[in-house]
Length: 404
Image (cartoon, rainbow, N blue to C red):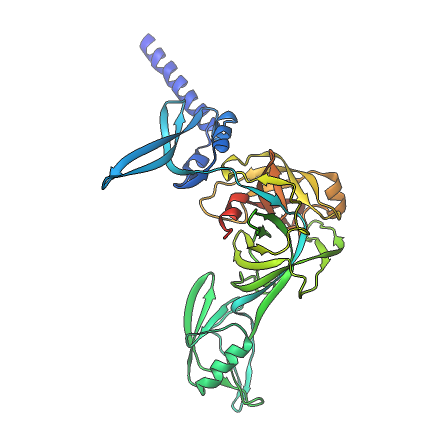
């Protein structure tokens, strides 16, 4: 009888310890740790001092050294231990110094021309036998080649179709980030006597967004998400592009079910502040030509690893009031992500000044820097339509990885 009682008691103790461990250890974050993750000594210290992976978890760096062909090789690993002695995860890391950047926060105008042309609609062609059309291409497809020749604008397509003499042409296009090919037979327009594919196309885009940071090498990151075609939602492959200073004309406040916006004006031409080189899931990147109008060169901010981003207070940097200011926000959820995403964490605007000015997050604020514990942790990317006080952010180290 006494033995059964002891076994039952021990079972309860073990079950309680298991549940306590399960509740207090962030196994999801530990599992998400990847090989070759960049890490700073400050990040390592923070993981331990603030128990960011759990109350019963410790981390430390170890070095594995071996000789191959007479040459010494070395790997640095991050070892995660439970209760200080049970190893539960080991992953290689790259130890690096904190990288500091100049903070942005001001709105910019963006213009890009595409690598290829964007299909924005279908169009019937009037022939001598009546109306005809091609249906293989869909809205949002990006035509990059015809018969192996690179396409940059409408004239390039016209030239290739004219040379086809009505014979089928091979069209290379991108759909959902995948390259595809199809054979299309040009249709002869009886009114213009020109061969056509029966599609409407466009090869440029423009809009307003916010600068996130500029590095000491004058590389910039902005917007926090990809530039997409406003009609089709397709991510635009950039051939070239420019950024321009903006004049703010006003703000349309956001409300439930309706996104607000920054109303800004910019003039294309010789006043460009820099060039756009990349358009990715987590932002727009390139090189600035004039930092004086964009950042305070006396103020730098280190970039934090996504490993230390936590639920709690943070600051949003924006010039929506006319000057660059800090506004109080709260990080309410973070996600463990293996690859870059423009929805890395969720935050809520708490600052009454910003709520009074904009109603929360509005279009044009994408890219606004977000700082926590004195470090840049990310940028604004999307607003919740049903609640403009809430938005998504992208991790700053995802953006830094894209800097050329």
